[in-house]
Image (tube, rainbow, N blue to C red; front, side, top):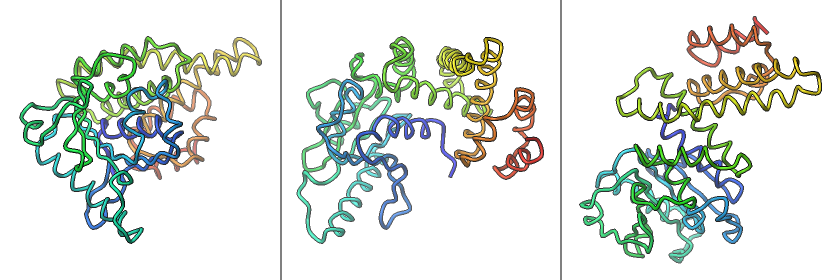
Length: 308
């Protein structure tokens, strides 16, 4: 299944942030429907959710939750479709235990949108939940909408604002780069943004609004490249300065090629990734030239068999 770059980024970001705190299911099947829930999270222990690490996302994840991110403003149809997934899931959970579960034990739906029209909020009775940008429907619906464009610009909202658009997202990216390098999840988020950038470029179908986004990601790419090279040098330094520099260059090229390949094929066997990471700089350069000719992972594996 091919994903759009934003879909892939949003799902991987939630998986990165929440997996230490519970089970994250991507593209969960909806019973009786040919539809999938984008992100489904079941906390292991809500008291362990760390606001210092997750920010406002910790508050949204204290119960079983469905997260449905939208790159563009959702329509009324989109909201109803998300609600349908929620209630089909409720019905399935009730069938599983053969009883009607209390509302508190049923999942909550959060629709995350780059922006939301006033009309849509009025149509569904969305009311501010005490904080700018967070709207909830009447309690029985167990549904809320996050208007990312309205979220306050604070460190607590950073992870959510990365899913925004335009100026909102660009500012969040700048803030991410300014965080100390030791900040939890910073490096992982930068890696995902670089992969998103590469995914857009690989499709060779860049819309005008995405060109501005690519510019915003240029600094992210430079930071990722610097960090990757530095890590390689540090790993190889015990073998000498020259060896360390070579190790850094090889690691950087291997990481970039792996991102390109994941953008084309989504997943790669671990054995294939390990082979690529062991290639010499010369072989990595040859692979970089050849990879655009690969139509599937099998072509890549055949190339590795003949060139490793």
